[in-house]
Structure formats: C-alpha cells, structure tokens
Length: 301
Image 1 (cartoon, rainbow, N blue to C red):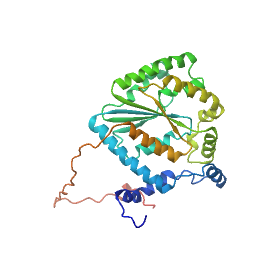
Image 2: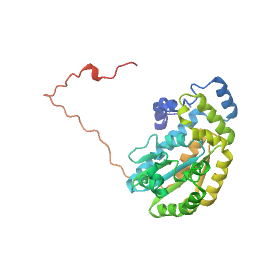
Image 3: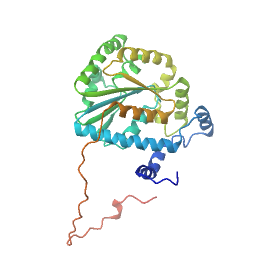
Image 4: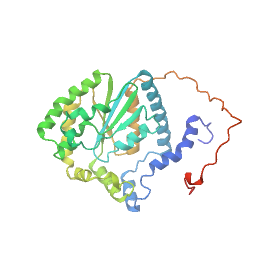
C-alpha cells in the first residue's frame, strides 16, 4: 500500500487514528488471563486498519445522510434494543461520533418517575421525537415494557398485553406522521454476554456499566429470551419491521448496522454554499490585555 497515492480518506485516517484508538482501548487494563480467553473466543478479528477505513467511510456517508435530513426536513427515529452488553452503546457512539449534535441526538431515558408511572405509557417518549431535520437515536425505548419491565416484574401481564395491542398502532401513527422509524435488536449469545460481564467486573473503566438489573439479566436469560421472541412476533409490522444485528463481534456489528441504516434511507447529495474564510479585521488601536495567570489551566502535559 505504501506505493499507492494517498487519497483524502487515507489522510483523514492518519489524522483521526489517535482519537479512534482512544475509543477502542477497551481492554487496556484487563488481566492477561481475561485477554487470553477473549482472544481465544474471537479468533477471526477484523483487521484494525480495515475496520478504521470502513468506519471512516461509513461515517462520511452518515454526514451526507445528516445533511440530507437537515435539508429536506426529514424525521428519523432509530431504536436500539438488545440484551445488556450487546453493543448498542458502542454502535450509537460510532454513528453519532462525527455528526452535528443539533441534528442527531441520543435519548437514553432513566427509570420512570412516580409521576411518569401514572401517565399514558408512551407519553414520556413523545417529547423526544424529532422535528423536521432531526435524527433521534433511542438507547432503549418504549420496548422496555416488553423486556426488562416484564421480566423483572415492574409491569403486570395486563399492562404488557395492553402494550402489545397499542404499540403497532402507535408506530403506524409515527410513520403516518412522516417519521422514518428503524428498529434494531443487537443479538449476542449466552457465552458472549457472560464474557462481557466478566470483563466489566474486572475493568474499573467499565464497572459503572454494571447495575444490579444487569446482573439479574444473567439469572433470567431464558425469561428474556421468551420475552424477546414474543416481542418480535407481535411487533414486527410491515410499517416498522425489526432488524437483528448479530453482535458477538462488536466491530463487525457496528459496521454492519451503519451500512444497513444508510441503505434504508434514500439520501443523496444536497446543495452546499461555498465556504470562504473572510479576511481578519485588524484594528491598529486595539491592544490585547494581559490576563492573570490564575485564569489559565495548569500546563501539566
């Protein structure tokens, strides 16, 4: 490759590797034993250079999608569901990494308050839906009722049944209103989830991701499986189908999800005004003041 001329993508790759390596150093302080076990269970790792090239290529397309959504006042909602540690957050992070937060935003709601528990179930999600020119990515969504709330006993069977009756029409209403609704389920095996939980337990940078609810999800693996299967059966509608992302390989899952999302939306080039840097205005009478040293951040590095 060294003999090939460097295109703009190669130059961009060189400029951004540090940032991406920082994000990717997920096992930097894991024990050697956990690293060994993980690598034994993931022998077919995607070449890092290939991964970064494809990541940057797809992110550049996502910027085009963003511009198209903004220009045409489109409304896009993407739901990310899946078991704990399935890779939803990592995919969302890479999708939004280079996008304008004024156009693309992430919604990750906490547990409902006492007041919200008395509202219409979908009410707390509605204020976060996009206006024209916006993309909203839900890191977990109203499907909490079909999953964690049902399995952990936070919702009764009558409430779950009401949800299953309501959600298809709710989503059809969203689609009729002009929202492009995409639903992803990130799927991992029992063994892969166990390994990722062990990594989180032994990695101080990731222990915050483990909650008592996450640990209970290991105990109730089969209950979650049954709940997921009924959820697919009753909410996979033509207007808003489910798409399953195999997630055992995190890097491939991210790239596949990004590529698939781009393929669902008929975005294209939009007109852009040429940008010209204006000349700096110099005032010969202006003299910059010397600021006190205590205002500056200490230069430790």
